[in-house]
Length: 103
Image 1 (cartoon, one colour):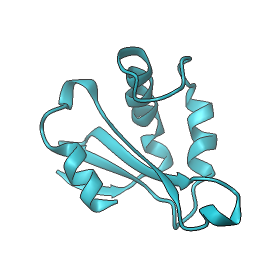
Image 2 (tube, rainbow, N blue to C red):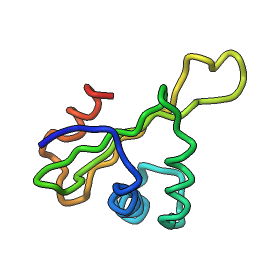
Image 3 (cartoon, rainbow, N blue to C red):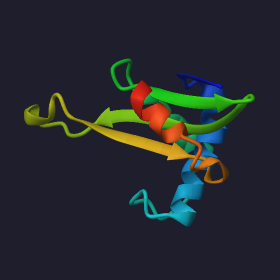
């Protein structure tokens, strides 16, 4: 088990986890599933100071956390959106808490 920075190779797993959250919860305002291409664009918009981390357990991505700019106005310079999504079958194992601490 380890937490590490996400790579492009993780996007398929990240997309599945996110789309399951759209389908089974109200954790996001999105109502339509995202494509892998859309999530690649999302990934590429992140900068070093707004990382995406993945939690890998036995070579499977079981969750991810990311930071994104909150707004473009100067007053939001030090504010971020935090997202943490966990694979639907891996919830309740403490992965989200560990990602929260790591991010």
